Length: 62
Image (cartoon, rainbow, N blue to C red; front, side, top):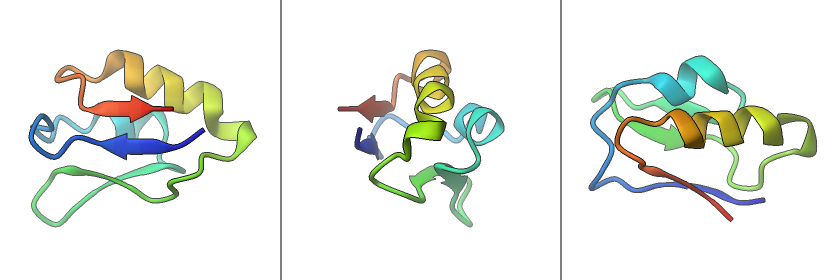
């Protein structure tokens, strides 16, 4: 599974970081970024939860 963040949609709520800090981080400007593009299997459930709970729907998992 690959993770991406749509920079145009992200507003820096930080929900993804709170739910899956192994995959997501916040930049110095406070916006989400992906730490590991290929999500390890042990973090897939947490990454999906972050995707589903992103207020701006900025996270895409494929």
